Length: 344
Ligand code: TLP
Image (cartoon, rainbow, N blue to C red):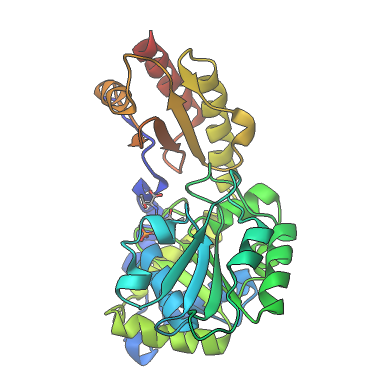
């Protein structure tokens, strides 16, 4: 049976080139800093993001937590969006494991945090208050239609951060999607951030891993934090090898995923009962609503699943679809055909 699986870009499987590179990877003990393939990936990633150093970590969640541990101490406060993945979907690890207090402010529909809201959330020096240390931005924004934050916004947020001696961490799980969508070099988009964590295992199709990048002092702290979380891996070069292929071969093609996402949104918008604005789709994530008395998102997803199309129901009305390496334009046409039959 034909399956078009749009639940997430995390479903991507390693390419043949990745499997070859993994089989042939030169390895060593990375906790001793002696895995040449991990070292190479970290240098490449840092270079792509215009930062001094990089650190290979097991996942996006670990990349964010390690970055928070490196930037903040117990009792410090972070400012982040109420729709931030770090707030919504990482088990509250910043509070549970790192003792870091979150102050959330509402995300705008395009993923930004309003600059006035940020200013308002920054604490003054008062014995009653935690100390604000860090602003977290998400780029692209998973919960906000995959919107990319542009360089002008990054500069404006960074100006506020500098004025108050705060740092900026970017949860860039899909950072290269943002750079490709904005048509700019990743290093230019990362210029105003103190740290950026990006995932190799989403649209870039590697089987495992994320890399965090920042200055040398930050990465030294992050390396300690990774170790205490049990993330000091040994011959991790077999994994990093796939990440090197991701950076060399899988970045530019993300544009295809964006085109396919737009095609899907345009098609969905034409199906009665489904609500989506294709103009809001800039990268590979689409949220749409089902507005029909007899159809909940759960029911919709079950029906299309039975016919071979997979998506994620999120909340009382919303459904998420994500395009990726294994989805072609023809798959999108086929999925749209399945969906319009289900909605008839
Ligand atoms: N997002 C996943 C899952 O949460 C469902 C997805 O399918 O979108 N930051 C952002 C913005 C993310 O979208 C994700 C994963 C993470 C961090 C965490 O990455 P992992 O899953 O590697 O820990």
